Length: 332
Image (cartoon, one colour):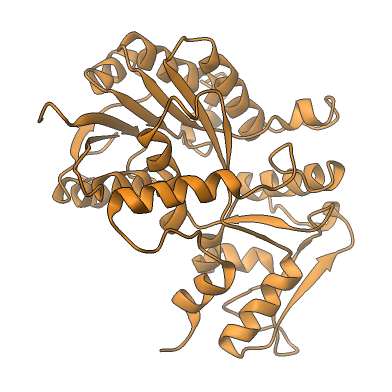
């Protein structure tokens, strides 16, 4: 590693967030960063793809502190995103995401890492005065609070909004009315969920286009973003306007069908869907404040522009919902 390169280790490098961070950092035109990625399975297709890009892929289990210490050794910066859907969390009496988060944060600190960026969420329990609770949100937030006490030169939390990439998942679409793949009996591509709440503007984020650049931008000037909570949002837009935008782009009849109550959203006993159900209850209770504050693209916009300049690309603007649909669904 050249003396000018700063080693950044990405925990969860084969995931959607981690992968986006890796790819953005690798595009730095000055090769400012060397990237290391952790994974439990170095033989996976995703791990091999990262290795082919020049990433140092290292086997490390987040529950194993010694492996984490080895993974973070020599790192100038670390990005961490833990999966709330790890099967280990479903074992009675087993570890929680908070246990995992603390183990990782302890290892990052003990390895002497200077700069940490952590993918977090707001505490639903705190925001609703204990009326609601959700482990995925609450434990990530508690891990964030734990990290603030570790004395890093800089620590920044990034909270990602509703993934635009969710619209590319045909399996997920089945639980949301079929939009944008399967028309209903009236011939409409219908997106069916409860209302968001407040102004109804959902904080959409393109993980592949923007999230990695937002984190890249933080690492370009970590001291500036120390102690900040960055909203990972590309463009806020209501579900109704989103459906109209899709129709405008594709010419396919589309609409938003608002369920009468958050309670009408069926979780089917599937944990991610049950979490979404609670999330809608939460956003309705808080006036749509998914981030605990009004939607704000200013930080993400500045970070995106900084990363674009560092990559030497002309497009330093955040993804719009319309452009995303044009790129992914409009016939060429």
